[in-house]
Length: 569
Image (cartoon, rainbow, N blue to C red; front, side, top):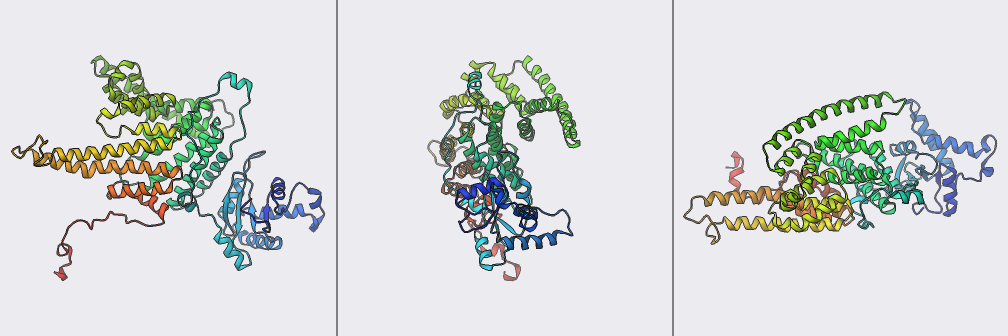
């Protein structure tokens, strides 16, 4: 109730809200003291309250919209209403999202705060000019809330979600009331539904605020599948927004950082509640978008099994089932083709890692994991096999098994000599909300990338005493040019990606200074990176500053005469 001063006139929509306002020392328009409000005709305050409440809802008739606005202004002028509180609690019935959506799209009201139990809207078209200006100054700036005024997230690293044992279910009943953070995240995601036409920075901000709220809800109730499902949906929405920002760059964003975060949260929700159809639908959407054939098949089959017994399906639901059944049939053909090719390759006694890699490239990730797990000795003796196994477990969203494999990879990884081997370890840490561990992994990865880049340049440099290509060998210029190209292009792109990973971890946990520093370094390391459109958006959200769409090239030593117009030459 901090958003409502004692002398404000907050129009509450339910009796329970009125009781809460009284308890907080605020004014109430209606509460459970119904005998004080009941009457006849104009003295029936309950009927007047109901009429005023209905005026908040948007009229479905275009001709009566203006009349409704006039009536609403007259009614709220009469009652001197300064705030409206749409109910968003879920104690007895579903949240009143209809009123929330109507108020968000109204020109008469502005959102001041969104709480787990209610929204707080200020009237911005009142008759008093000073009151209107004060209301405008208190409208919630979601971009500032997410990117400039956020506080450190009060979330500790947690254990993986596992279903309770039968003895625990027997002794204690599961908590059914969702955590306040989970509810708040659901409200923000509902706001995002009507914000599809808004600029991307606003959509980014809503997703980030929802993610933080969902993380706090899970910290409060780590055994509720609803919290993980909401978190997965928030990551999925952010994945779509970032993909829209990178449209046209050629980057396959369907399997980015957000994919691993979303799939981890969705899998934890599925482990706690395997029979939730919404979770299975989200999993199949994620896996289908990432091209994981056998994983998509499992989610589609499970979803169809869960919804097979439902009666009175709508036309839309029937069409969805038909589309999923057709998808299941197509994927089954892909899996059968992979099995046939795999059987042929096994008869030729090819290396197990080659077989698994071919299967994964064909979209059969679970089959690739199975091939490696069938020979534990081979995986222990082959560090590259361990790396691939850990990466595929992260793609599938495994829990304890991924953590165990990541722990082994962390010990043997330094001698692999390949880039990005720390990514699966960091993804596993993020699945446990261990942001610091993920940041530490990517900090070490940056050190290794810089070291490898410098080593390649020194080894191939002319006059280098350690160079195998000395001045007398004609191959040394070519080898050095290749090393320079790798350093300037590919490795710079990799460094920018890792810096972006670090920045996003810092952003999620509320370390805004660390997020700004990470984005700055990514832009400095690779000004022409394919990630530049996304980095520009995050930079604007963090600093309210615009960057050029194209990277600056003023450092290139070109004389003015080279690009001067003919008239000046």
